Image (cartoon, rainbow, N blue to C red; front, top):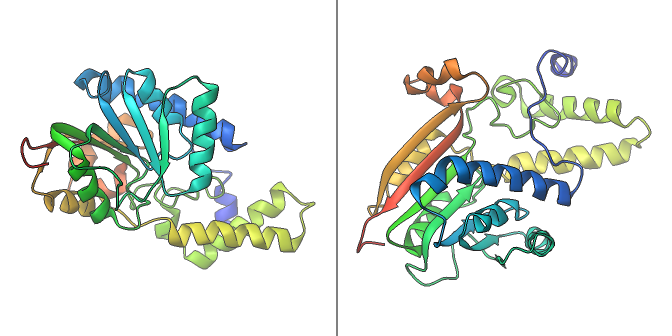
Length: 276
């Protein structure tokens, strides 16, 4: 089975996820996509310019810098201290007036109603406590404000987050954990034949630990259920986007298929006035 998975890498295209060369490169990749999301979704709804914006799970800071470029007074938080350090370096290099703080999304260190807009971009599927995180986001937004959620759902073609090594869509649904780990080991051996077996084994262990611990299996259905559990929130936009082919979009509205076809969830939540 390992050979089959590796062989399928020659059939399927590698997903277009950039910035893998270094932290700086990943910050730039985030910056690019942060601009795209701002331009396409948040700017037209006036959720950035002149607004107090919190970027929850800010990663390496590129998206937070993009929101600041759109006129937001932005703050980024991340649970990983090294992410926050890189975010600060990137903001300084880009002359962006952005603050970054190490904090848990499920215990935001801010008073109620501090922000006008909260963004969680590529974070909802990673939160250890997604229910607590969304509740905290709702608490931190002033009445009439907005929460933007962008994430890759679990059952999507890219839900494994192993796309740097295994290109087969839905690989996490088609193959066992052991089979995926074996395939990743083969891929790493082919890419770096000079590496020792011990070094490759250590890399595989780290990759699979992230696979086990850093994903919460957030489906579209589960996400919407969590939203319904926060009385102050109302869905004002829900867009389910297929991974590559626009003609698949109608299938995102078909029960039973939407989980498999929807590669990206874009959701805007409005916070009721007086209830935040």
